[in-house]
Length: 78
Image 1 (cartoon, rainbow, N blue to C red):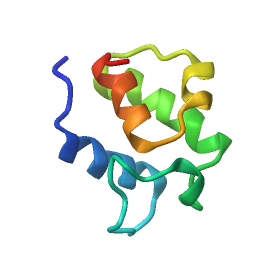
Image 2 (cartoon, rainbow, N blue to C red; image 1 turned 90 degrees about the vertical axis):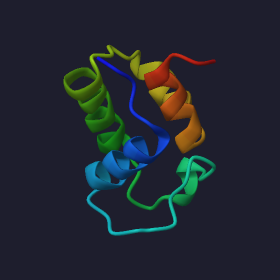
Image 3 (cartoon, helix red, strand yellow; image 1 turned 45 degrees about the vertical axis):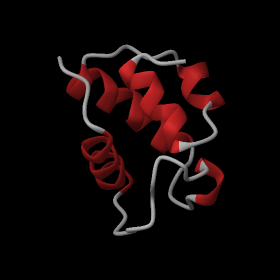
């Protein structure tokens, strides 16, 4: 599967969080997103698998500090 564009990723991330926030960017700290919690992390792992064909390590998701960190997990950048 092709990696999503940054815009597609953010749109899907916001949809997954079930929020209508328009201020989420790659630079947004996950700690600043009220909707981001451990359940969201599990949901993110599921989305990564089903939509992007990526099997993520839960610890990597847990260690992510920003939306950019999550995007990098999907596109395979460190």
